[in-house]
Image (cartoon, rainbow, N blue to C red):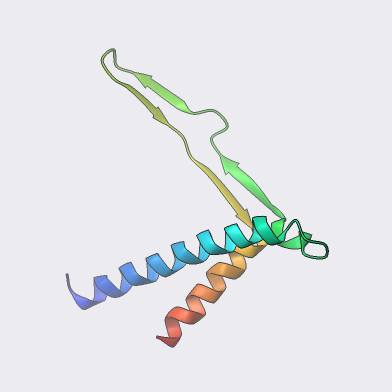
Length: 85
C-alpha cells in the first residue's frame, strides 16, 4: 500500500471514529438538561428493508443513517485532530 492511500484510509478511519463517538455522546449527553441540542438530528435511508429471496438464500438489504449535532461536531474534531498529526 502506498503512503498516499494509507493516508486516505487513516483519514476515513478518523472520520468514522468521529461519527461513532460523536453520535454516542450525542445520544448520551442529549438526555441531560441544557444538552438536548446535541441530540437534535434526523434519520434518513430505507424505511423498510429490501428482501431478495433466491430460494436457497434470502438476502436483506437496508441502510439507515442517523446524523445529529454531536456527530457533526465529532467529524470536525476528527478532521482537526487528523491535521494535527
